[in-house]
Length: 312
Image 1 (spheres, rainbow, N blue to C red):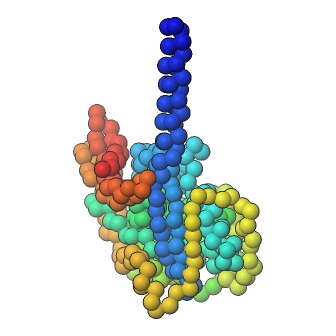
Image 2 (image 1 turned 180 degrees about the vertical axis):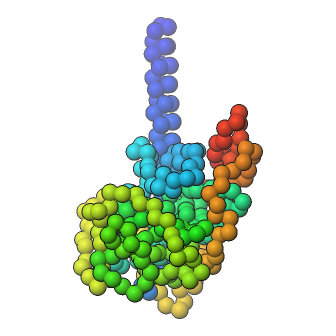
Image 3 (image 1 turned 135 degrees about the vertical axis):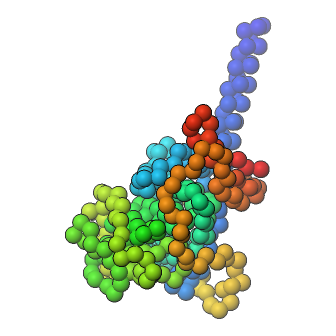
């Protein structure tokens, strides 16, 4: 009798563990994005795994190597799945490679500009995506990650106290480019809307630092004049929804957060947070259908710093 009771308890415990595992996996962070490209209004509804968001939120920050944030833990993939949504958009709207790259740039440029304050807080791509904003290096890292996942040859470009992205083109166009590895990488500004490939804000420094992720020699060299449509149908599918519709002067009826005006971040100094508690950011996110406030802090404990994110 006692053996049967014990067996029953084991079965109940196993069932609870299975349920708990399912519930954890089912927890989702919902994000809705809207942006305009080529006279079309795009809307994307995307669901992130909360454990994945929590994992990157809790990782240590590196301040001397921004390529670090392009690396993902294979157990917590983000960018490949998110980039697949842009492949679907390209397939549905018959976008060329050039148009696809421009569409991604337009998406990034709608992100809110968030000044980190006195101390730098580099974000992982999923943080910028969920929180819908960041400063110049955050949006540049995100754009670099997506374009790289789509197969483009690109690098991070850092003028003095700023950061953007450089993308290699097959032919020369009118615009600003920086020579690197016997190629010309045309600058892309990420902090506000309206900047095209090759547009370079005149107040930025002429000297730049190139952060090269490598492994891009086989990447796509863009051509503004080659509008060959690439069929992405049948490639990886993700749990999301996207809609593109023609826009006109009444497009303002669709709720859309305006991008911040471009500005040089004078606090872009790569300085780590000092050893004390410091509130980095406060964001509104939707977790399992409920709006929650996520507070990100850096806390010093036993001489070590760690990132802590709490929600309520």
